[in-house]
Length: 115
Image (cartoon, rainbow, N blue to C red):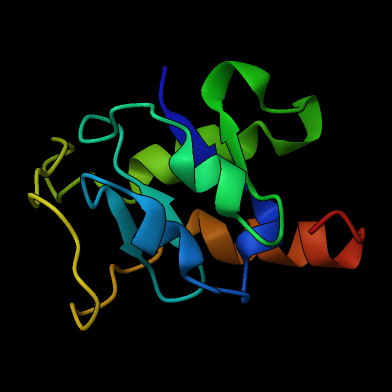
């Protein structure tokens, strides 16, 4: 079980969660942050500090936010489908490319007022 960032992070990118993470497993994307599924040690520091309440343990993600489980994982898959292991994020690193499904999810969640 890892932690997952959900819809309320879209286009907010406060980034305070990255300062609380002891293993630097939270990566900046173009429109939101993503938690690496194998680098995360599940300490919960990011969840406790998130100003928009976007972070949940995977098994606690609300039904309406379930698409973000796959989105967070997809952010770390390379062209072959394997999980990339970047080894930790630092401020100033180039943002990850958002998975294409984020554009669709963003329209849905922002339109419905869920984000």
